[in-house]
Length: 271
Length: 196
Image 1 (cartoon, rainbow over the protein chains, first blue to last red):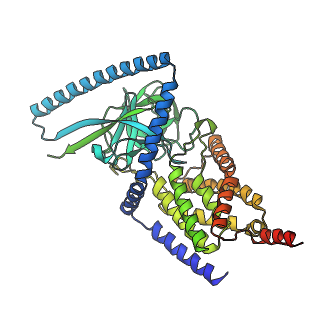
Image 2 (cartoon, rainbow over the protein chains, first blue to last red):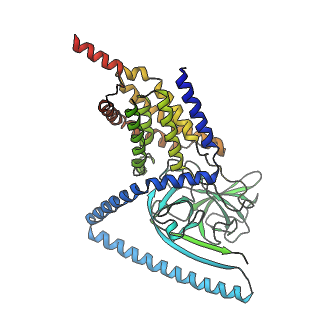
Image 3 (cartoon, each protein chain N blue to C red):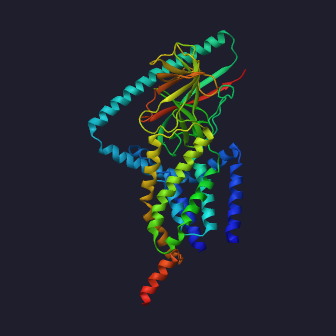
């Protein structure tokens, strides 16, 4: 090997070791710096994309647009209804907390966001949304849709965030099966790029006798990330192992058609 | 030579920006055009080892900054078995390995036979993605290789390879503009023909 090539290789290996030993915080800073540097290109690209979309929309048949508008209105009314119910429950919860002199105060609010990019990386099941730090979004915040839990925020920039979907293998949610004492950890599965991705509810009891296909799965609220009682999916089948049982769960959210999501801004304060 | 190196570095950076706007083709097994890898591999065969390693460092560094996932977070009492993520910096080693693979057939490229290099970009990307998947399997455990994954890797490699002649054409143009020779033997052969 030529001396120059050897020196270059040693320098490269030194650089690689330096990079591999960066802490998570340092990596996050590098990622933030990288996305800040390419932000102007994103803005220019988004402007072109918006124009292209507008042109595409114009070419759509008016009846199709009418149907879509009708559907959107119905959806909006539904969401308004859900929101008003949420507010009522929040008020009721606050008054009940007051009644029992519970000192912790919980603020619950959501930010609506549009999905601007799907599957930006090869292996991770993620999407990008058009809201970021400017809307008080932070890492690990839960993301919902009208159908249930979508995932959680991973990396936050000023005007965009990436969301790790529930279907990603790295996604873990503490979950319970409706009407049973069974609780477990719901995880995504590797290599599910086609069709409807299924989730796996792990660490159920050995028999899991009370779990039946068709039962709904909700968040438990434990683990410090996801609020309780958010719909996750429906049990498809149960697999019994020697030590525990696992259930295959069909997610309640249709990730292929997802367009609008809601980021939950939670600030739980200790007394 | 320095001008050519700087321009290829800028070309790689431009590829990173363009990559942001290249979607995954859901109808084609979620395949995508890996422009960054393609530009790097095509460039790797036209430069010396030190420049290739510099480009591998830059590409790996920025690729991990772009694609890295954060730690799972949450209460460790509940999520006591977090799923491992690939550590920042692993891509540099993969880029360098693929770069060395491309340089293996540099003599053929220098004879003017760029077609072999174009074919090798597809093979190198196939190995790159396979190695990435193997690393994920290694850190997370549990070997799962679905048909969807194999198809995604194969179609991504094939699709990306189709664009390699275009990248080589751009590199030849850049080399001409910089008065830098990247096809020594091919040039000699052509000059010999002219003289005879």
